[in-house]
Amino acid sequence: MDREHIEKLAENPNFIPGIYNYCDRWCERCSFTARCMSFALAEEQFGDSQACDINHEAFWARLSEVFQLTLDMLKETAEAKGIALDSLDLQAVLDDRKAAEHITRNHECCRTAKAYSEMIDDWFDSAKGLFEEKADVLNLKARLELPDSNPQGEASDLEDALDIIRWYQHQIYIKLARAIRPTLEETSYSSDEIPTDSDGSAKVALIAIDRSIAAWGQMYKHFPDRKDDILHVLVHLDRLRRKTETTFPDARKFVRPGFDYTAQRV
Image 1 (cartoon, rainbow, N blue to C red):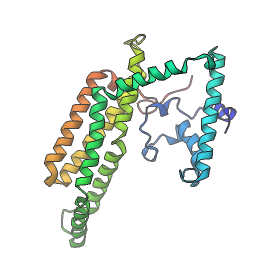
Image 2 (cartoon, helix red, strand yellow; image 1 turned 45 degrees about the vertical axis):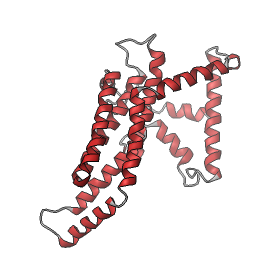
Image 3 (cartoon, one colour; image 1 turned 90 degrees about the horizontal axis):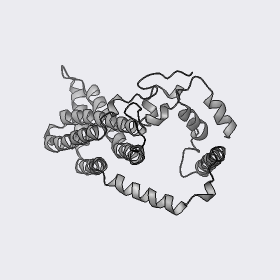
């Protein structure tokens, strides 16, 4: 892979510019992979079994190649803009970065999202035998062929709910942290008329929260004996959703390329 190849890919009119900036990285469930340049590059670089195996030398060789190309492109872009990277005060940059990270980690949204991710681990640790019991019940229903019973559908709904909960468990925090960091820089030049990157990231987090709430609603239906602790999770998520909407009041209105409209090249 080289810069010329990337630039050639970028000229492909089939790709939606920027679609990968505001997605949830769940490519297996995405209907836009054929129009995503990031997905195409990932398939080229890590599509074979060895290249996507972190225990295989090929993976680290490909990853090193990607990092080196990214660094080279960054240097070329900086030179074109008259920015001397070697003259930057790296210690000052690191200090600013640490300060921003501290503010981000301690923001109420991030603290609540982090608590949610830990809460989920605790819940699943306490429910290890629950799913085996549920499987036994569903298998019994299937053998008895009870009327008005759909054990296959129940199993599919439950599996989908579990996949959603686990997929977004940590991503909510990651997306909110990504949303909060830019706000430390955007305040000096942002405009009410211009959508910000922080709003886009916050929207992805809100969608993840919405889907997680719906998934926990399925869990509530399947495990009524655990309704109290499931309700506790739902209340926590709803509190996080409301806090995020307050912090980023324009996030819901943010238009994500591809997902909320199909971007057209000019």
